[in-house]
Length: 406
Image 1 (cartoon, rainbow, N blue to C red):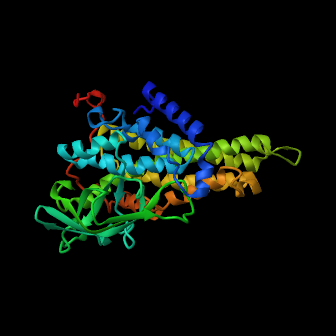
Image 2: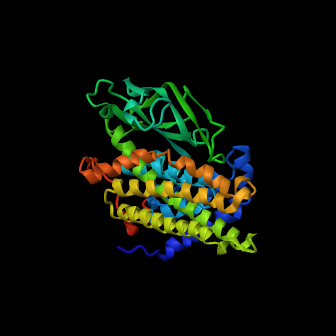
Image 3: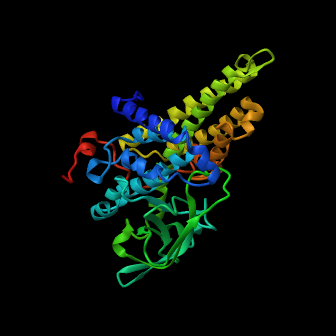
């Protein structure tokens, strides 16, 4: 097991860090206050190749591995969570879900333009009455003359108003003995008749990101847009969440690092009681805990990425990484505010935004309570890895770098 970064890893890490710090950091407060996504973010991320970073060249990607995906997410969230959310939803949940489950025709039609950033994608799982309880999904899809007619509403959908495509999970068999087995997944173009969508404002955090709702009313979708077989929607959604949770874990690690960097800088400058506050042991203890959390979180997500590169199931390891990193990032942000004192409570400094952003990650892509249950289930032998029809492909640099479309 070797977690040392390659020259390619370091190159992409430095490139993304430079982009985020130089182009986004100076403007992010403005858009956070306006509760809008900066219009240049998606085109620029596409231009840099980030929206297909870990997909093969033949599918429009950059041919890098899953560790590179994690490094990108860490660097983006070190500036703002809204940028990492783009990677989580577009790449982790949607693109990697297509890469794992779609047939070649679907990959040609949907994955290639998404990986190139020509089309933006989102993920439709949560509903007004179904979050952690996926079996409670009410959205329906019924067959009709070579099509499916889909009805339903999805809520808390990142990039809802920005995306061109959505991976939509709906109930195709309402009579299935196990409600999980009655779900199917579809890739749907969001310009189809019967689709309405909008943004949600007033969120506590991730205000510079796009979060919204999507409603389907008798939307006709060709059968060829179904991903996988009927009844595989739950498996597809859960495997997509493994990928999304990995990006959340990596991003939360970057947020811990940002809290640490801001706290160290402030503690070395701020004077109290006749000395720098960084020389006060209680301040040192808070910073030491951030160091501990950052190193542990980084090792956990690198471990999950290493398993992904090998093509091995990583549900437990990714769950643990996401649970630990998101809880630790919220605690780091809270302590960073404490170190900054009254200044930390205002938006003059970044740490108050870090706290607001960190709180959401404890809820989305599996609440901390869900991840506690997952870990306890594995430890007690009450849970194992349910079989999938296919795993996410193991990384093969030669194949990933081969551009078969030329």
